[in-house]
Length: 622
Image 1 (cartoon, rainbow, N blue to C red):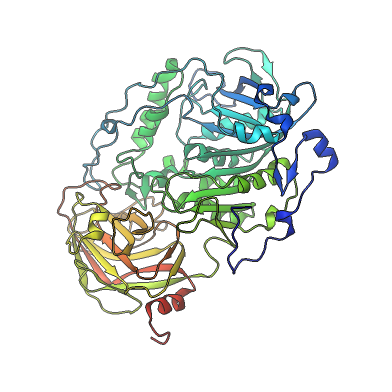
Image 2: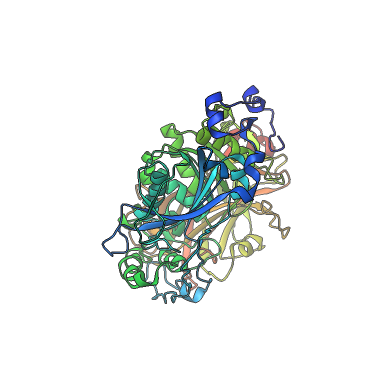
C-alpha cells in the first residue's frame, strides 16, 4: 500500500495488514460487502449512481433551543444503495453534520472585534453582522461529500444540518449542548430510537429500516468537531469517528493560557462572531436566537480578562470526554494555526488514558487534511462494519515527515515519540541581537522588550537587531534533531504596566524567505502574565493584575509538534509581547523585563540530552 513506510525502529505490522480478510458468511450475505486487505472494496452492484436512493427527512430531537415550545427537528439527507429497497439489504452509515451546508456570512472584519484594545481593558463594542445569509427554504440534497467514496463500498451516507442552520430548527449555539444532542438524535433514529418525519412540521413518519445501526462520523474543522461532540454523549451505535482538525474547546480556540487570542487568519473573531457567521436558519426565530443565545455569548465571553469560566467550560469537550466510547482516528496538522494541534492532542491523550481505541495521523501542513483513504477505510471497516482486520495491532501514530506526500505517513509506536525526553535550554547574552541558547546553567542577567504590535513575528525573527523582542539561539546543528511532543517554557518577567501580552516562538534560524512551511517556525504559544501561578494556566479561572516592576513566573506549553530540525540550522527561542496576527493590539511602548537566569525552555527531543549534545558537538561530560 503506497501510504505505508516503515522506519527501522518500527516492527512489521504482521500478516493482518496485508492478508485477504473475508467477512463471516452470514454477515457478508446480509451486507453484500467485499473486504480485501482489511478494507471495504468498491462493489460493482453498488457503484451505479443511477440506482442510488436519495431522500430527505427531519429527525425529532429532545431539545427546544428556539423557544417555540416544540422539540427541534434536524434536517438530513440520505444516499444509499438501491439494494436497500426490495432486497432486504442493511448497510452501515457514514455520517457528516455541519453548520455550513446552507451558506455562511461573508468575511467582513468590520463586524469582528476590534483588536485595538489594551490588555485587561474594556473591549470596544462590536458591530454584529447583519442578517446577510439568505435562508434557503428547500434543500433536498444537503451535500455530496463522502457519497462517491462510501456508497459504492456498500455504505449509506447521511448528512445533517446543525441546529439553527439551513432547514434544521433551533438556534446555533457554537459548542452548546444542542450541537452534541442533534447528531445523537440522528444516530438514535438510525437505530430506531427516535422519530423521523417527511417534513419539518408534518406527522408522516419515516424509518431507517435499511440501516444496520452502526455509524461512523467524520468531517473537517467545525465538521470535525461535531463527531467528537456526538461521541461525548455516549450514544449507542456511534462506533467510530475520524475528526479532522477538530476544535475540541472553544476556549482554547479563542484564548491561550488566559490571553485573548485570535485563531490564525481571523483576527478579532470570537464565539459570537462565529454565531453570526453560521446562522442560516429559519428567519422567524432569528430575534429569539439573537436575544437568548448570541447576546448571552457576548455577555459571557470575557474579552477583558480572557479567563476560563462556566460558559467556556460548557464548550470544552475535554470536560465530557468520559462519555466517548467510539473508536477514534484523530487527524491534524502541526502547522495549523487556525485550529491548533493542541486540540487533537489534548483529547487523544485523554482517550488513551481511558482505553478508547485510538490512532492519530499528523501532517506538516496547515488547516485540514484527512488521513489517507486506506487508513480511514481500515478504521471504518474494523469498527463500523465490524470486521476483525487487525487494526488494533497497527502503529498508533502516523506522521507525515517533512517533504513527504501526505498519503505516505511514517508509522510510529506512539505520539509523542516514545524515545523523546525533555531537554532544558537556557538563554543568555544580548537578545536584541541574537544571544545564546545552551545547556549551561548561568547567571545570565536580564533582557528588555518594548512592545510594538506593528511588527510581525516573522519580521522580529528575521531582524538582525530589535528591541521589540529577545532572541536566543543554539550553535549550528551538526546533525538532525528530532523534536516530538510538547515544549514547555518558563519565563520570569515584569512589566511597567498592570497587563501585557506575552508571546513565545520556537524558530529555526536563519529565518528565510523560502516559503517552505518547516524552514522557519517550529512552534509557538501565548500567555497572560496576570495568570502567573494559576493552578491550571491552560484554563485559568482568575488572574491578578501585575504590579509594575514586580517579577512573576509563568510556565506554559507551546503547541505540540513533531519536526526534524535539520543539520545546519540553529534552534532559536524568541520572546516578545504582542503578536500582530494573534493577540490584542495595545498602544506600543509597554516595557517588559525578562530575568534570563530564571527563564528556560524544555524541548521534547528524541534521544534526549545525549542526542542534542551530539548534534551540537558538545561532549557528554560537559
